Image (cartoon, rainbow, N blue to C red):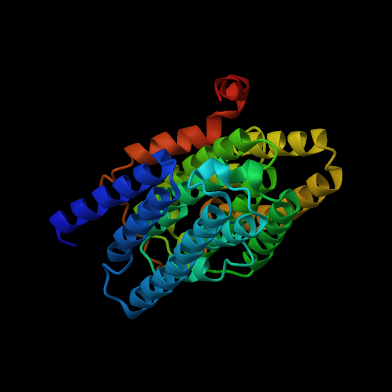
Length: 346
């Protein structure tokens, strides 16, 4: 990809995200979402593979539909109340339309069908952007309007997302699809608590970004796209594969790793809100995700593929640029002990 085109695309991504998260007016927020959508499409299609073109078309159609729903929802609310302020969403139909639109933009179930396919058609670095940076603007809008939304609807979407994200990830052999269903499952955890403690949702999102970035960057360094290639990637960078295992177990939410903190805090808050059945169901559903994270960790570090005596070992990667990977891997493994300090700072 042309360096100038890449620079313009990345600057547009930053600009669109900044406009949306700093705006207080529906039209400005919608403009930022549109800039983001148009900026990521060249990054998806940069390989010119038919799968990438298909992914970009699916992404554009879904995001354009969701943006139209956002605009329609805000116009309906403005027609009824005379307000264009993000925090003044009071009309019930507008609230329902906006919930649907943001669920489509985030990839929440049952509007999740586009997300695994788009990630599968993208490169690992673009998939990382789609899983993290592109989720921030819609999540910010959801954060700002969360007092106006219907908690039972959000809880239903969250439980369906946690169930489908765990269930559909069980059978996958492509790492990008597995991480797509992992993202859907984590979005369920973020959505279930947003009506009761929105700051906890933002904290969960930040920690999810750290853990997912560590996994994607590790897979990018070893060029691992399938489980079968993951079994031989340990010969390239053994230490990196060990940190990949820690990042995967952190995504699964096992103590004493970072990923345990948001799940623990969300279950605690749900119990305080007298929602013990919801807390029990979502905790049980996280076991589905735990299975495929353990399977990935097992393939990455424990299992060896069948080989003959004359099997050629792969060359180790020549000086990979692993500074960001090291930072994110450290953050995804060591933040649990300082979670009280994190909680007091938000």
